Amino acid sequence: MTELTLTQRTQRLPRDHPRSFLLFAAVAWWTLYRLLAPASEAIVAFMPVERGSHLGGALQFFLYDAPKVLLLLTAVVFAMGVVNSYFTPERTRALLAGRAEGMANIMAASLGVVTPFCSCSAVPLFIGFVQAGVPLGVTFSFLIAAPMVNEVALTLLFGLFGWRIALLYMGLGLTVAIAAGWVIGRLKMEPHLEDWVRNMPRVQAIAGANDLGLAERIDAGMVSVREIVGKVWPYILGGIAIGAGIHGYVPQDFMASFMGREVWWSVPLAVLIGVPIYTNAAGVIPIVQALLAKGAALGTVLAFMMSVIALSLPEMVILRKVLKMRLIITFISVVAAGILLVGYLFNAVL
Image 1 (cartoon, helix red, strand yellow):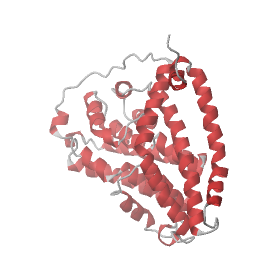
Image 2: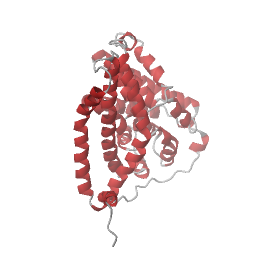
Image 3: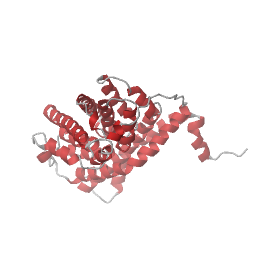
Image 4: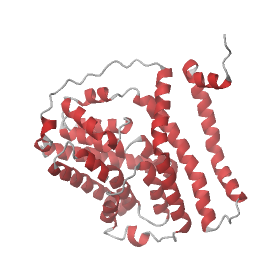
């Protein structure tokens, strides 16, 4: 029998010894995470720049935050990939089909947090939900929560701001998704679906068997890391680079002049700026961190972030394939109103 090389044995470890692989990966991850702060300071110290200069501060910000966010993102995306192996699209539709509105909106928004769907998959998901008989408002609760309150957003917020802000954002995002979906459901907007969508034959949503073992679920987690982290890392580095520039060069309290809590029009301005921007949580959150550090109000930057993620122009173009303009305008108006309320509320109380 041919002896396996070290590389081959390493590649087979998750499949042959899944528990040992998880333990080894956790120890390696924790060791790397603990080394980030001293490593970033040491690298800047070796560079021909003053640590206290604008450039030195920007470099240290980037060299610390970029690997920290990527490490956190890798860990959480892997864990959510394992969780997501229990939630196929078919199972998600089966869980939501035939349920009354209200509790179904809460359930749909909650499922949006733990399911790996983004705005790029909005049309096929929407069609599948409609065919399965999921109410329109419940479908919108899911479609709002899935891109806005996902593992990427929560991981970056936790890594950059701590668990309080991450939980705050999750609560706000779920509230907007649930309330917006409920309102759209009450408005009875089904006639404003495109005709071909309304005329599709209904299908029964059935949750198929899902008896994967630990090794297969670990493989699902690793696939999620390759697909999600592999897709968003340029946005992360770009966002952190912009954030580093703001951190190093923008004067302290500069942002307070037009994004502070005393400026009444800052929240609607933030929403208007955010809608046409084409990025995701990975790209916008590092910018949000830098804006807060320079005097922008928390409610204003949360409104900006939510509008970028939940009301992006590309997603509206995609949804136009299945929704008539009146329903799209209603969707934008209801979600934007929720985001504005969130922004003003937190500027008033924080």
